[in-house]
Length: 356
Ligand code: BGC
Image (cartoon, rainbow, N blue to C red; front, side):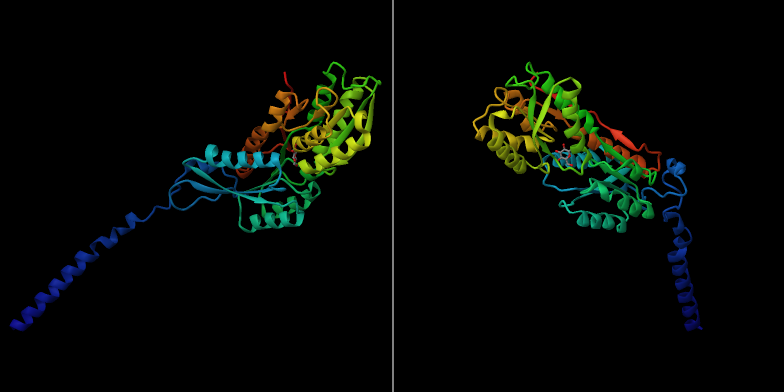
C-alpha cells in the first residue's frame, strides 16, 4: 500500500511538472513576430511591379543599385561615379532604406559590360545605372532589363530617342552637349580678335574629338564651330582627329598638328578637358603661349583645368556638372524603383568658365 501511495505521489509530481513546463506553450505564440505589415505607407505600391525588396526583419530595407561605368580610367567619369556612390550611401540612405551600391568597370569593352549588366539582373538588383561603352548597345540592354522588369537609367552616353521609347522604366540623365559646344564658340567670340590672331580674316583651328560615336563629341564638335559661323566668323579646319577623351592622345594629336601647321593654328578646340591638358603639354613643348599666339578650349571644368584657366594657360572650359548629373541620376533611379512615371530625358545645364 505504501508503495502504491508512493507511486501515486510521484505520478502526481510528474504531472504537475509537465503542466508547469508546458504551461507557457499555449502563450508562446504571442512572442512570434506578428505577420502584420511593419510599414503601412507601402500601400500604394503598384501590384504589377514589385520594386524594392523589404527585409523580413526590422531595420532599413536594402535596395541594390548596380552601376557600370564605361571605363574607370576617365577623369570626368571618375568624379561622376564617386559622387554617385557617395550620394546614394551618405545622403539618400536613412533609417528606412539603405542603398547598397556596386560600381563596376566596363573597361571600355561592351561585351564585358553586357556581362556585368546580366550579372546585375541575375542577382536581382533593384535598379541599374549604365554609362554604356557603346551607345549602340542601348537597345539590347533595354530589352534585357525589360524582360527582367529591372529599371535602367542611362547616364553620360545618350541612347537614341527610339531606344528610349522601348520601355517606360528607363530614362537618360545627361547634359545637352550642343550647349557646351556653343559655349566654347562663344568664349572665342568674346575675345577681342574673335580668335583670328593673325588677322587673315579667318579662324584656323584644330579639333580634338572625343569619340565620334558619342553625341557629346558630335555636338561639341559641331556647335563650337557653328557658334562662330553663326556670328559671321570665317573658319578653316586644319585638323579634326579622334582622341578618345584621352590626355595622351590629345597631346599626340596637337603635337603632330603643331609640327605640320605651326603658326597657322590659332585655336585648339578639345571636346573635353583631359584632351585639353594633353594639348597644353604639346603647345608648351612647341614654345607657343596660350592667350598670346594660340587659344585653347576644353569642356568639363576639371579642378586642374579651372586653375589653368585662372592662370591664363587655358583660354576657357565649360562646367560639365558631374555633381548635378550624379544626383539627378540617383533621384531618377529611385523614382524608377518606386514605379513612378519617368521622363525620357533629364538634362543638367552646362556653365561657361573663363578667367572672368
Ligand atoms: C566628358 C568627358 C568624358 C566623356 C565620357 C563627356 O561628357 O566631357 O570628359 O570623357 O563624357 O563619355
